[in-house]
Image 1: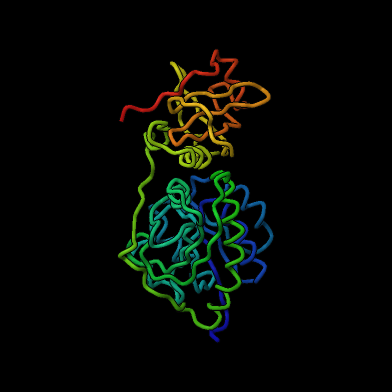
Image 2 (image 1 turned 135 degrees about the horizontal axis):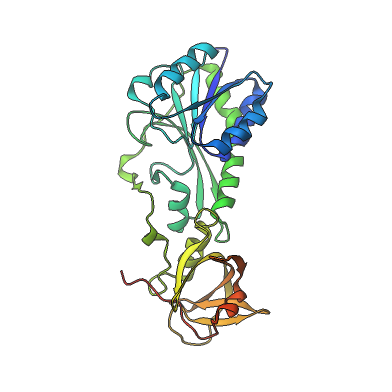
Length: 316
């Protein structure tokens, strides 16, 4: 066995905290590095780490390299684990540590490379998401895979719910990974299958608008829930009113009427807001977001919207 394992975690999201706690309890956590612009995460981690002897370090793009070198030397770091970090590790640092830089990619590789694999998987209608732990190389999300574990995606899952589930999954993967590190700083890994590789760019506003003419009921539900809470929901237009649909669920019964996609079939307090989709199914909208705040679906009545009115689809 190689002996001591001293881990430095680089993160930019609270999703990393469950895994971080597991590393801390093992005695291997020596430093945490976050972008200096993430003030809320800094304050949270400062409260958690004060008195533990673990260094909490902030960086920006310019200070990243010297700060990582300094922290690695002072804390005798053997490996760096990356969890949603916002900066690319410079090529000059890849061989800095015996165990290198290991990335927790919150998505399934190689199929879901990119900045937001959680969203990409949800919008693609995938039944599973997961975490791929891989060695960091010179390119983005291309390094050899050390381990991968999966969890289901339910159509009712919001983006926030998936992040919470993935945070718990990350914590469960810590102990097996630490055991591998104890045997050798160089972790066993296998190359990614490049024939299956896909890279997803950051979505633009047009990607987050509901197109009732082309999206199935499942796609509508996935888009709405995948945009909650970070975008307040999926964009929608009815009349001259723009709003976000923030939470949705499937309606089990088939629609017994013919209507144009986007038509409101029910809009009242007992039945809520139900909308017709082109696959002859209904979706129930539980929460909407307007400039005034978040409300139940039936609150559209307060804006002069009625049963039979129709949501518009984009022209693209």
